[in-house]
Structure formats: C-alpha cells, structure tokens
Image (cartoon, rainbow, N blue to C red; front, side, top):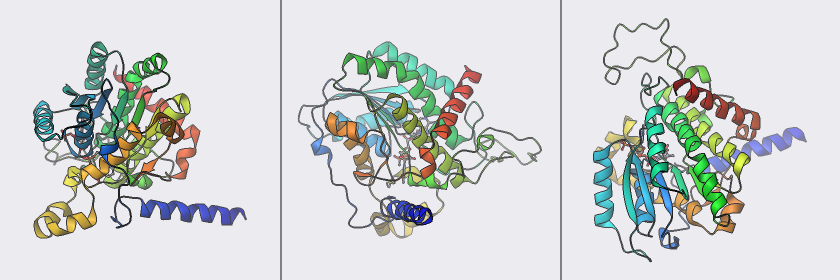
Length: 358
Ligand SMILES: NC(=O)c1ccc[n+]([C@@H]2O[C@H](COP(=O)([O-])OP(=O)(O)OC[C@H]3O[C@@H](n4cnc5c(N)ncnc54)[C@H](OP(=O)(O)O)[C@@H]3O)[C@@H](O)[C@H]2O)c1
C-alpha cells in the first residue's frame, strides 16, 4: 500500500509537472486571467527585480497601468530607463490612471549592491506592499561568478534574492502591522527547472568558487573564457538548484511569516531568458513561426505573478505558500521542498554567506 501510494504520488507529480511546466505549450493550457482584472493599485508600493525585461517588464507595465508606484530594480540604468520610457509610451489607460515608475539600481550578483538598494529604498519609502523577486539568469556558462565568488546562477537567483528579502523583511513586517487587513505579498519566480536540482536541493560546495587543482592556463577575462571551478555542476543542474532555492526561500518565508504574506512562484514562459541557449538563434532565424508553438509570451508568463499579487486578499490568504504554475494553477513542487529542515538549512547557509561579506 505504501509503495502504491508513493508510486501514485510520483506519477501525479510528473504528470502535473509536464502538463503545467510551461514548456510544451499545450493548447488547452492558457491563461484564465488577464491584467484587466487588476484592481485599483493606487497607493501600492511595489518592487520588481529585473523589471526592465521579460516577465518583469510585463509586470511593471500592468501595475503602472493600474496606478501603482513601482520601483524597477535593475542592474543597468540604461536598460531600465529605456524600459520605463517604453512602458510610458505604450501604456493603455487603466481604470485609475497611471502610476509611477522609478529606477533604482540593483545588481543581485553583488551583495553590496543589494545592501545599497535596500538602504536607499527604506530611506525613501515607509511601506512595501508587493515584492517581486523576479530577476534571473538561466543556463549561463559555468565559470562565471558573482562579485563575492558564488556561481552566477545560484548567486543571482537565490543568494541575491535571499539577501534582498532579508533586508526588506523588517519593512514588510512593519507594513503588515500597519495594515493587517492588506498584508504585503512576496512573489518569488522559480521554474519547472527546479526539478533538475541535485538530490537534497543544493550542493553547497558547488556554488562557491573553488579553483584549487584546476588548470587555468587558458583562462582569459572571466566572461570571455570562463574556467569552471572544481566542484561546479553542469549548467542546467546549477540552474535547477538556484530555482529549487527560490522555492525554498518562499516556503521558508511562508512557514515563518505566512499566511500574512503571499509566496508564489511562476512557471515557464517565453522570453529572452533563452538567450543563453544555443538553439535559440537558430529557431528565431530559421523557424520564427515555431516560437508561438513552443513557448508563451512574457505577458502570459507574468499573468501568474500578477494574479497572485493582485487577487482578493481572502483568496490570496488561501493561496499563500503555494507553488503556482501555468496558468493560475497550484502545482506540485519537488517533494523534498516539504522538508522543513532542508529549507532551514538553505536559509541559514545564505544568512551565513551574507554575514561573511558584510
Ligand atoms: N523564460 C523562461 O522560459 C522562464 C521559465 C521559467 C521561469 N523563468 C523565470 O522567470 C524570471 C524572469 O525571467 P524572464 O523570462 O523574464 O527573463 P529575462 O527577460 O531575461 O529577464 C531577466 C531579468 O533579470 C535581470 N537580471 C539578471 N541578472 C541580474 C542581476 N545580477 N541583477 C539584477 N537583475 C538581473 C535581467 O537584467 P538585464 O536586462 O540587465 O540582463 C532581466 O531584467 C526568472 O527568474 C526566470 O528564471 C523564466
């Protein structure tokens, strides 16, 4: 019986993952929600990491059209200002008029930059209603590191966002205390790719730069000729563990502070995140007609995070802690993400890294 129950759980997990992965673009899996359903967001203060592109851009645009004050947390001033100009120029009139878009520099691959961002943000604002931990890098080459020497994907997607959330937590809790009927919401972007994480979630020794015993004679400038470190994992496994970590961050937050906060994860979408895939330029050049068959748009992709960020508070309370996948569906994250000890271990490990660099 136990074996059958385990087998059934396994089958359901993989079936759900395949159907709602965001990858096969099944014709019957379509968004059941549009941004026209967003209520008046006037007075809401929002942070969107990576708001200049993809799902982050679509998120900023939709909330701007509904009156929110949005901090576009991006690493490039030029790209952010261009995105802000494009949103303003292309915005359709919302129900309540436009909001505000403000660029604030944030490089998640540099813990000092995360500190600066948070100091500046709390100096400007007295509350934070919505935090979208949206930015991410996918399948970047091995041998690239964050400023403090962590693998680029894990360091950006997980460690950088952990620090951001940690430093903004007092403000989130203060916002919650000041207005308990409208608790703030935190939405962490993950991916179906989290299932590719190593057994146990994260191999901590693999995400710390270590070139001991590695021949680096061919190494050029890090970005041009990166040399993988001793313990580094293949790039998709590394992406997987960074996204396993993203879900773990949200689950940790939910267990410690939910359901006062919303903690949700997006699934697969079609955006320029695929820039690192060698097949992407070929498909774009030779078979652009195939793109809509294989993927969705960033607007579709953003619909999950916008839905959970703006739905009615009671519905949001019920959903808090869920792993939301394409589209508007509560999906199944990898079962080891229910292991509370593993989540505590991840959070504590990230905390310890941050303390080393303060
Ligand atoms: N696209 C997919 O198929 C897919 C599938 C599942 C999940 N997701 C998740 O969805 C989220 C959004 O991805 P997307 O598809 O919208 O990709 P995207 O268009 O490439 O956007 C990624 C954003 O993250 C920003 N970013 C990257 N590194 C950063 C750093 N160190 N500091 C600050 N910002 C940084 C990028 O900034 P720059 O413009 O400066 O590079 C960009 O704004 C990611 O977390 C991703 O893992 C995507």
